[in-house]
Length: 85
Length: 220
Image (cartoon, rainbow over all chains, first blue to last red):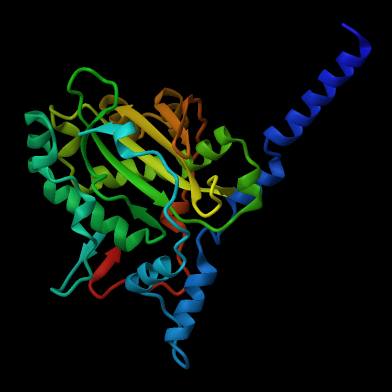
């Protein structure tokens, strides 16, 4: 194998390692990520509805906010590809 | 897990449960009829107490894993998990994202399934459990550019394994090692994934800011 091809392989391996593996810092950040919810939109919704009062979000508010923030019909696997009735 | 007092409660959609008569075998229909109250309680508990996830329509039921020839029946549930965009999460490999989601939700769902109906685990007709999780793939859109893409994993676990996990005899890491986990990227099947798992109490500790339970509802 030529040294040029070896260099390309080594560079590819380094890039793969850099992009394919989570660093400890990335894991720690995700694991401790408390705002793991589309909270900004829901918070805005709650504040609009409780102006001057105590902010609160009900289950109905969550459903309405989810509808407002609808991203479009997702591309996802059909349930029949996973489970049979 | 879920307590309710009083008569006026906001109710989750009842179409999250697959009706008994839409199961295709006597065994499955019997299970669905026998445990319908527990499944409704499961649905209601998730609706009120984990409001950032959405139970998919007709996804709670006693299904047969696709491709299995004998009539093995697994109590299944499929959840869409809504979460903030997270660069850290997006940078993980699919295996690592799957491991993170397995850690966060599979054990919690198995506990909820059985807390909702304590007789379930001892039902001789039940063969196993399946938890299907999907989430939005960050930064990805369909070819037309206007549709988000979801990543999905489906975990299948035999009943004996789940019983050991629930009894504290099996750590979640071993549960993940032994579970059969399949993955999809959008509609494209990825195949079987090897996931690792760790204890994650996010589901029981995370609170949506300013979220107020409906009157009469409590989450244990």
